[in-house]
Image (cartoon, rainbow, N blue to C red; front, side, top):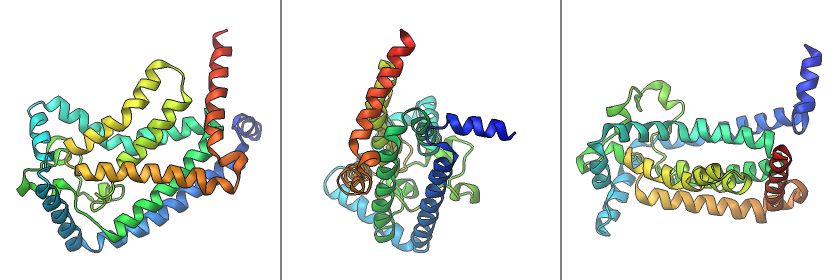
Length: 268
């Protein structure tokens, strides 16, 4: 057993110690998120009032388009089921799988992306605490439909679902923020044309899904992308100064070159 553990440790990019360190960092980040989520969930009346404010603002601009977008696709159940699955899996399954792959096979890029994700979480928590907002699906009187509850076996409001979903975290959309960050990274560090096409389209697909499922307003998408861009700047201009050799943007570019080189050698 000890020999197997040692061999796996040698295969890991930076050994068992670094792997456990990354796990601990994510646990700490999640604890901070859960604490902030508790603050938001303790003020449901404010969250609903803020949701009304967003709807009123969009109506005032003549841009409350989400109910129309939903109604256009609701007739095709397979489209809704597809959108539901993307929404339920994009933040956990896809993002987590991508980070694991990045850590193992494009390790140079991983640390910059990790720092960018942590920065985005910090920025998003400011919005969740300062402006808790009920999502569109909680306002059926305006024509919104909760497709997760209506067309899948998942109950948004169940005790299990609430362990993973913040019901009042509409502004900004972290689904969209994370999709842009991993989509951009995936596009940069992969070579296969299909993989690059997938990652380039991923942020737009997730943005569409968040509207079709009634989980976000269109303004949440813009704010989520803004958070992603701000996190990119923080990671590249501020956090990278702590360890420029491992945490700077150039490590992402290095991972891309190394990945291309490995692919070329494999095909030789």
